[in-house]
Amino acid sequence: MQLAMNLPKQDPPPRNRVLVEAAQAVVAVCLDERAGADGFWRERLAGWYSHRIRKVARRARNKAWDDVQALPGVTVGGVRAFVPSAVGDVPHAISKLQIKGTELDDDHSSQPLDPSQPTILVDASLGMTLGKAAAQVGHASMLYAANLDVDAAREWAASGFALNVREVGADEFADAARRPGAVPVRDAGYTEVAPGSITVVALPPET
Image (cartoon, rainbow, N blue to C red; front, side, top):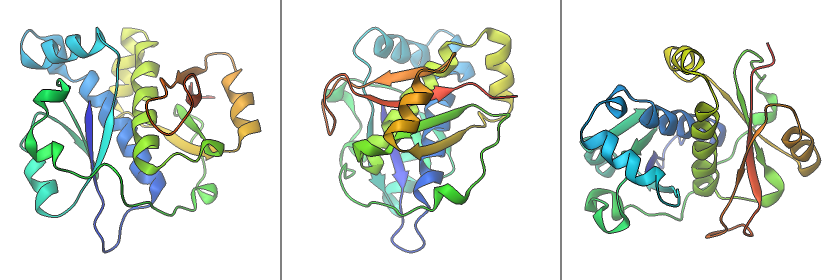
């Protein structure tokens, strides 16, 4: 699955907002109503699920961002997640976008968590780039949704997939990964981190 992040040079968004929107956009594609009906959307997702699941986050801005809005997918804020395709079938409007690039600052520690929402924690000690972290939180949101029953998934969808994302230190992250109901994401190690690393963990709401 490809993701495009709208990162303008002037007034770029905070890193935490991009990560929240990436997580929401990915799960929105997976739980879109078109995924439940026969046709293109369902076929592409089924093919993706049956192979090794990978995500690639790319930077877009200006006309390039506008151009990709016409391609099948879901946009949440400044992130668009696209219906999966084989690597060789990625549309040129997406494949030409830069993968490496802009990093963003964020004072995420000052933002309160909403305990009524699921929370995705990112292991900050791994030093993941924005694009890598965006792909990982997207994986966490879809795995979290897969663990919900139908009614809970519909309720979460009705909220717009409200969630928290926080980047935390290694000790706090390790403690969270051991909590009941925690949904960890173990990375295959293609980029940035060692194979088998737990990069993010999704936690159910506290209330």
